[in-house]
Image (cartoon, rainbow, N blue to C red; front, side, top):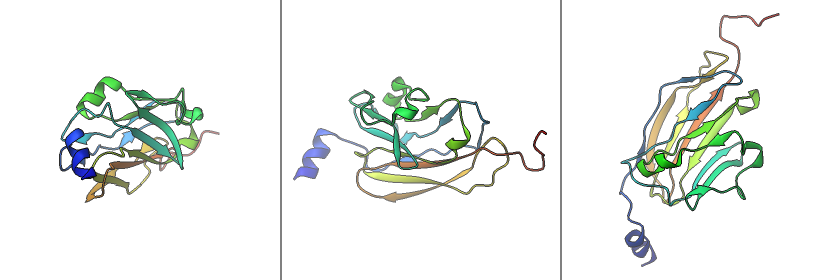
Length: 163
């Protein structure tokens, strides 16, 4: 009964997928967009959206705005979402002024969705600047959409460091 009530109160499409992205090149100091998009598109502005990195909630969107009480304060001035894009299911996160420590997996979580999508990176760092290519796998799991993306910040293959 609760699930039926929930579906009636918050109708959502039955199946979701995340649109993939070509590798993104970036270097220390650059700004990047971590892509995460719900399809079919629908307004997710009223839903809770979490971006996680190394076990921390680096950005939480709740009640149509950033929730600074649960977002990691270390990322407060370096992360943002374009809230008008949420009406179209675009839950991408902008990460500014990249540092070496930004290397790792980023997870986008939308707890109320009914499908889960995981983007798993098969990294082959090209550069001092790579955010790797991704392969997507779709599977059912209640109330979540997850996307993972790895950023690789290192030296270009075949180039030596400046001395």
